[in-house]
Image 1: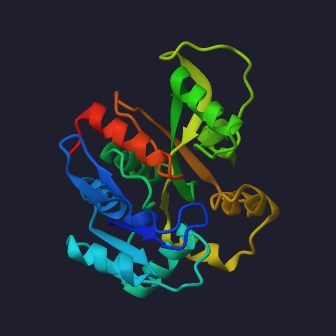
Image 2 (image 1 turned 90 degrees about the vertical axis):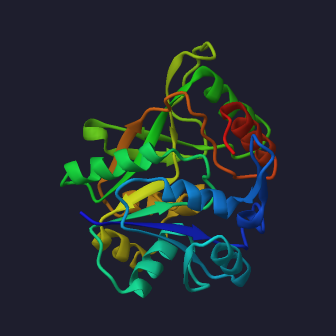
Length: 266
C-alpha cells in the first residue's frame, strides 16, 4: 500500500504567527527551522513513497525548497491541516492508498510512531483514519496539568473505547483522575500525538462537512470526524525513552530545545 506524507504548514497561526520558520537549536548547536526539522522527521519514516510540504505562504515555500523539500502550494482558505492535506492530495493528481498528515509543529515525532500508525490502519479495515496516542507517565501528566493551570494549551489528550475507537479528544486533561503519580509511573491519561493516517476517500470527504460545535469549542480538527460518525482508530505507541512534545506556544521552543539536548539530537 503506497503512503504519501504531507506536512501542512501555515504562517498565520493565531497562537504563534510565523511558527514554521522559528529556529530550533539542537544538541550540537545546529539551528534549523521548525519546518525543516519536521520534514527531516518525515524523511526518516520507512516505506513512504513521497513526502511533500503543503503551504499557502511563499516564505515557507522558499524555506522548504531551500533545504530540498518538495512543496505543494495550497489554497489560503484551508481551515486546518486536514483540509490542507486534502487540497494537496487533489493538486498532486496521483493516487495513494494512505495519506499521512505529519503536522509541521511536531519535529520530535519518532519514525516508528508513523510506521506503527500506518500498520494499524492497514490491519483494521473498519477504521477510516488512525492517530497515535502515548500513555502519559506522571511527569508528563503533571506538565499537562501545569500548562492548563497557567492558561496554556500544552497538549491534547484522548479517550478511546472498545477496539481502540476514539471517543473524544480535548485540550483539557481527560479522563479525570485525582490520584497522585510518581514521575515515571504510568497513568490512565493518553497524550494525543498530532499525526493522522487517512484513507483518501475519508480525507477528501472531510472539507465537505460543516464544522461542528465540538470542533469549534475545542479547536481540534479531528473532532469533525467523530461528529460525522467516522471510525477513528487510536494506535498506542511507545516512547522507547524518546521525549515528545509539539510546538504550540512560544515557550515550547525552550522546552523542545531542552529535550533535543537531553536526547543528543542534532
